[in-house]
Amino acid sequence: MENSLIARRFIRIKALQNLYAYTISQQAHKKKAIEQVEKDFIFDVFLDEPAQKEQLAKERTIAVSLFCKTTREQLAVTSFTYAENSKIEQSVRKNLLHYEQVLLKDRIFLQNGLNQSKECIYQNHLYVLLLLVEWYKLAKKYTIQSNHPDHLLQDQLAQLPLLEELYKNSKWISSINQKGVSWAQEPDRLQAWYIRLMQSAEMPRKLIHPLNPENSIHFLEYIVQTIIFGDEQIGDFFSMLDLYWDEHKHVVQKMLTQTFRMLDTKNFDKFTLFWYKTEEKWERAAAFYNHLLQITLKSSNAYEAMIGQKAEKWDSERIILIDKLILKLALAEILGLQKIPIKVSINEYIEMAKLYGTSKSGQFINGILEGILKGLHIDIQQETRE
Image 1 (tube, rainbow, N blue to C red):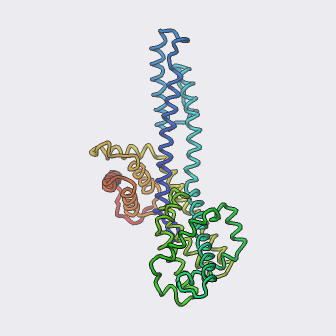
Image 2 (cartoon, helix red, strand yellow; image 1 turned 90 degrees about the horizontal axis):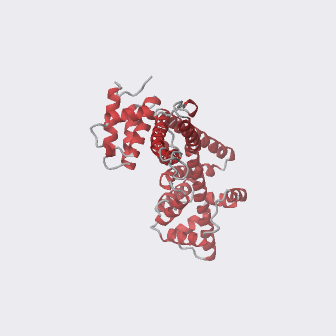
Image 3 (cartoon, rainbow, N blue to C red; image 1 turned 180 degrees about the vertical axis):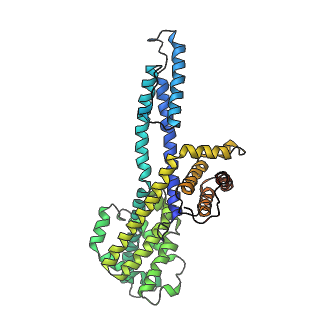
């Protein structure tokens, strides 16, 4: 499944980010539903008899307890009954139904999470390509205005055949503008960035001369990696466009490199095949992402119990939500996706814990996972599993 464009770590991170958002939303929905259950049993001084006050309080406690038990055990609304009290049954069933409906919407959003990242990455990819074209136009303009070009970087940029191909491709420019990708509203920003590009540290001379197809690709890669992805102000701009720019930009960079090489071939069939294969990679990534989350959600209660048994010696406050979700994803991958070596999975989730958890999350994740797997008599060193 691993490929040069979409790494498994990237997919795991997206699964964690989206599962975290889903869990926070789930907690908010549950809190709101419980509040609604409680409202169904509020004593009304104008409508209720004084003797009913104590009875309503008891019914409220029972109703909330039944609602929490049903959601905790992930029981279906249709299976819920409470023959002892029809009012309690109606209240709990009504709020369970609403809770399930809003969760279903969130789950659809969760399942589409990787696809949304893909769309952001594609948009970022187009923005960077178009930014290079805009800089090419500025370089061309200033080179023509000067009878004696004395800036090697500007001179090289104005002659790049790959950017010229894009600039002259009116169909391509029109199609990306239709997608809402345009720098037309940012002339001052483009100009300021271009000036900083020209004032930047001297580009390695081997990338400027001689001017040939291979050097053109390396030249553009250098500008993308060092200037565009290395500039704080440009980074801030893309972060406003994309909340997850810091993670997405690494995939964007790989896509740009492959795009430059495909453009250099001037072979439309190869370029079309490149995008077709890119889509295939995203489909495989989505399959891994969705399978991982499906197992995690389905076995959430079982994993919760496993974690609780092995975390007794840890301070309860240590188990922050992000650590718990990392553990659940790790268990889903290790126990449910058995084609990946166990040690590889453990190390990946330890690294994620270091990135997104506390300073001691990595140690905690490692200890809990090893304890659970030892209890299941699973050898973490084995490379392959049936």
